[in-house]
Image 1 (cartoon, protein in one colour):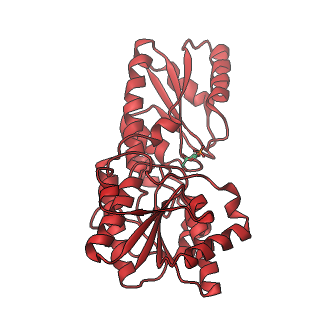
Image 2 (image 1 turned 90 degrees about the horizontal axis):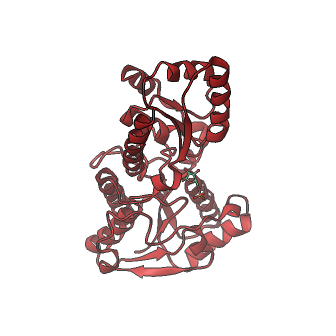
Length: 335
Ligand code: F6P
């Protein structure tokens, strides 16, 4: 069989472990198979940019951050039918039996759309997708995204560092976390480090209450602000400073942005192992001539069901961006 492997959307740690596992599992299980890396994500499928991968070309990359294949955003792909058709045809013309994807929300949607064109036109390629994103916003009731725990590790380290200065200067730090519309990264990092507050997307924030909480604290206060929240850290700073003036509260406020630092660096062991497990399942299923589908797992060895692509891509059915209630209760119980 002839396979293509692609990393899409925002890079994350664990993508390389996924690529390595696809290549090694394919060649070791069926030495006659071949695996081609798609260069620069979905853009590479538009321009037929591939590189043949062998055992050596993926040596030593499992823990490395980023992606050796590259991932370039093609914003217009979501709407541009002609680009979608080009990709479906290119996959067919290059005789790819399967395309393996590791990517986020946008990649799941692109894969589903292209898969529908392939089925409609009777073309050859099937598409298997694994979630790769620091946002943990893809079908996360069935498994967590590859890259999420790596980004949490980085966040935790940064949040512990900032505690030193916050405490030394009795300061308030407003700390921006990535995560697009999802609160997962911000909230889980907040639980792990014991942040005083995490502001989530769409939250009705009671700034007066936050000011009281800060006033009652002796030294450091770290407030994490999720990227999807409507106000920037600087806007929140102004709101709080005005409240401090009005209420005679004396605390300095600083802002800091963890964003792109959360995405890079070496992969967490749980992401390496889970990426390898999911890729192994994909390759084995591909050799059994399975259908297109979405693959995710909570842990290595988890016998997960495969989710049909059209369900994985449907936000109505799989929108789990809100933090579950019992996790919120956990955060409160730890305060
Ligand atoms: O999806 C991953 C992510 O890092 C989001 O958290 C963030 O909103 C977005 O990508 C940033 O994208 P870009 O790298 O294109 O600025």
